[in-house]
Amino acid sequence: MTSVIQTNNLNLSYGTKQALFEVNFPFAEKKVTALIGPSGCGKSTLLRCLNRMNDLIPTCKIGGEILFRDENILNADPVELRKHIGMVFQRPNPFPKSIYDNIAYGPRAHGEHDASTLDKIVETSLKGAALWDEVKDRLHDSALGLSGGQQQRLCIARTLAVSPEIILMDEPCSALDPIATSKIETLITDLKKNYTVIIVTHNMQQAARVSDTTGFMYIGKLVEVNDTKKIFSNPAEELTERYVTGRFG
Ligand SMILES: Nc1ncnc2c1ncn2[C@@H]1O[C@H](COP(=O)(O)OP(=O)(O)OP(=O)(O)O)[C@@H](O)[C@H]1O
Image (cartoon, rainbow, N blue to C red; front, side, top):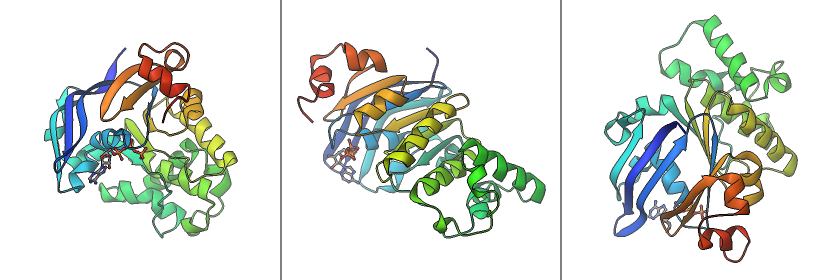
């Protein structure tokens, strides 16, 4: 397996509370990896480390390393890093701007101002997020007029617009209805042709449906990372088995 990003002995504390302990996690390239585990086990914390979102929390201290293409991202420029590693959040959070301007925002911030190039990026990104057909006739309408599921696909398109290699998703379907959820799940499966996707989910059926690899976390520790099929049918650790069979959590 080729890992595109890998944590080595990653430890993280919020003030005096340690939230991650010696996490060694290789994330496979152009695959979908799911992070599962009971509430508070550190899934979102681990995800946020991967594009330095925890830097925004003043009490947060990180030790160990996170290698992205062999460079320790803990020493990298976070703004530059986020061009390569994008993030989609639990609640869709479009800017109060037009659909077009939401997508063009990132490329413009990185210095792209050519109108025809921006038009192409907007079209390609919306197609990549399976939203183009639904919005191509109203690109200049407000993004806030879209449904929740469309807004979440818009946020995915906004992430694609800066051509990342890795897309982090923190419970991207938890605010969506079953139909919108199913569209996002199909999209996640399509995205892995071109991107590495890492998703935090509370929904074990969702992890089983969309991911190739699953990591099970418990109280800040990575208990087991393995093929998703193995995690759900024949995990190596008894704790994993108790969790995936619903005996706690
Ligand atoms: N900003 C913060 N300041 C202090 N403690 C935090 C902060 N964020 C998370 N924690 C703590 O770190 C631990 C891990 O939290 P985290 O949100 O990563 O877990 P999680 O597995 O994603 O949980 P959930 O499934 O409920 O979202 C928890 O004990 C949480 O209370």
